[in-house]
Image (cartoon, rainbow, N blue to C red; front, top):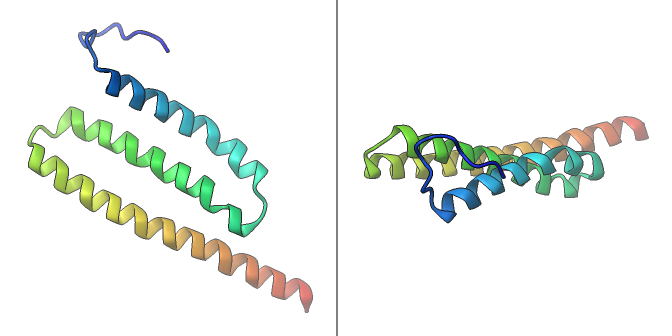
Length: 106
């Protein structure tokens, strides 16, 4: 991992760990999507994608929203929204593949 050239030389290990985790989740998305062909196994790539989105937005909130209470409420609503979207994406995959399977059987 490259060292930052900014004024954040004394960044915590948590910040470094989050940055590493963001890179790992971003790098794993394409292989997970390619490997998993079944509907039941699309949950892991979707979870990885939305976890990556959550971590990125948390980092942006930490940089730009300075009121801790406001930042925490935004993150709670974001996580709730992402859980709803994960459910909808997974269910749409299931219904799409069931429809396509029924059309192929006809």
